[in-house]
Length: 254
Image 1 (cartoon, rainbow, N blue to C red):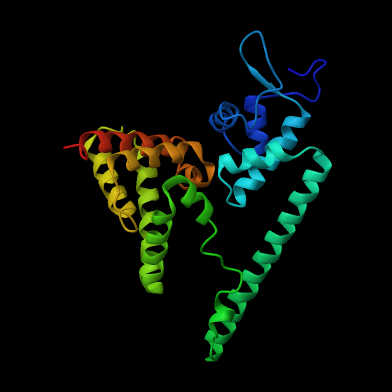
Image 2: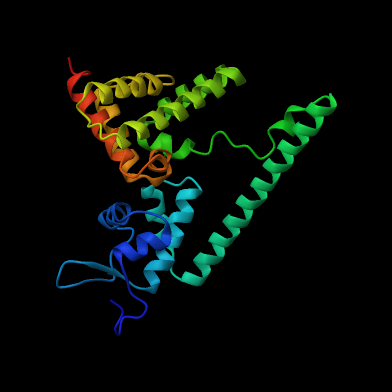
């Protein structure tokens, strides 16, 4: 491919280098975040060195919890790429400091638990932010949805919270197994998994058919969620999305 275009990457090459998928890059392009630097006569998309910098910034902002509309505003407001990278470096350093505090908190918990010492709440939860998705949830589904979900989460005991999280870990693994065995979205097995998934989603909120279908689409569009399923095998996220859409259309509309 290279020829005179030594700093140019195909969509497959860029996706591989960034540890993401061509589908994700096409979605970023469709919403205006990452247009290709050029499109070949064969319709293939190519990306230049500036595209690498833009994608780096997009992925960083995703890791920091920003939704795509918010990322678009950040990118549109930037003028000097060097200044923008300075800002992102500051964010990374702040995130590293937060992770360092989490590590120190866990070490303190381990030491005091093993030594039978009293553990203070401020020590146990230093560095943990359970409201990191507040803005995004509010933007997607409204302030009431966030507040209901937050109250529901805080009303549970630590064991109940752990059980809720484990239920999703088990569900994701079962989706991966089904995908590996060639299960398709409309089969009884996939629909049984979809029913489990909807029951899990119904913990914090009352879900509608539209909500369930949109959740599946979000899994495909958002790597932060899709990676929970793709780690169990390529194509698992697609099965989840298709099965949830089928369930929403056939079991929730009756």
